[in-house]
Amino acid sequence: MHTPDLFDGRRFDAIDAGMGYAQRLGFPEQVPERGRRAGERLPHDVVYAVFSLGVLPVQMLAQTRPGTRGAHSARPRRSGSRGMRCWSRRLAVTGAAAGYSSA
Image (tube, rainbow, N blue to C red):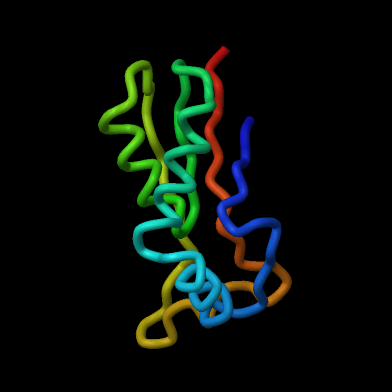
């Protein structure tokens, strides 16, 4: 399993803080580009599993990278207008995307 870190090791207690940092990195262009570059270093025979902002680069890699076996995305459960507030406060929001090797 590979878990490229798109946010330079930073962790955030709130979505707004994480999105603010992503914007300072150059979101929406630079965060997906970081993920794409990280994915290019993975073996070719992979299934991508991704969470949150990692969806953008994984979709690009899954559609264009030879040898991709599949992709799966996950996101926190939404609850009406509360949005991400139902996400567990015990878990930090990160910008990690994971590629699982099938070998």
